[in-house]
Amino acid sequence: MEPVVLAYIGIAVMVVLSGVGSAYGVSISGSATLGALKKKPDALGSCIALSALPATQGLYGFVGFFLTYNKITPEITWFQSAAVFGAGLALGFVALLSAIRQAKICADGINAIGNGHNLFSTTMILAVFPELYAIIALLATILIGGTI
Image (cartoon, rainbow, N blue to C red):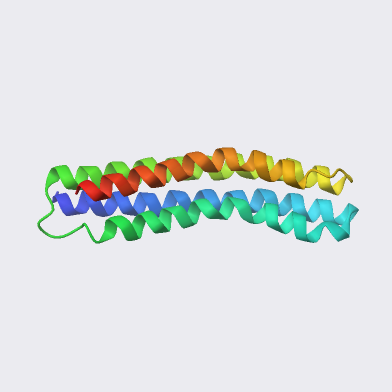
């Protein structure tokens, strides 16, 4: 296997896992939105905002792709390709898991809003915590890409 193949696998994993996490996360929070709107139709704005939060991890994977893709050349070394692969694994898995966990927080907040509780701001604040780790993984990808 050539080093360039390992690097391409790394960025593919980055994009796929972060996208899967966001798709799964948006599905979780979207389902909660449908349930909440049956009880409280006027909560649409709050519910949609919370439902969209898990989508950001997929965007981080896409940003990571653009930051590392231009580093892949036919002359890439094994060390450089391992760095791209490692960055892809790290960002991909962190984004996957943080999107799903963030969605569960959002879904709980959406359910509470549907039950008449005023928890939009609190839910937004709590939903930022899992997102922080996806941001840290993106920053690590940026730093790794800067060393290649």
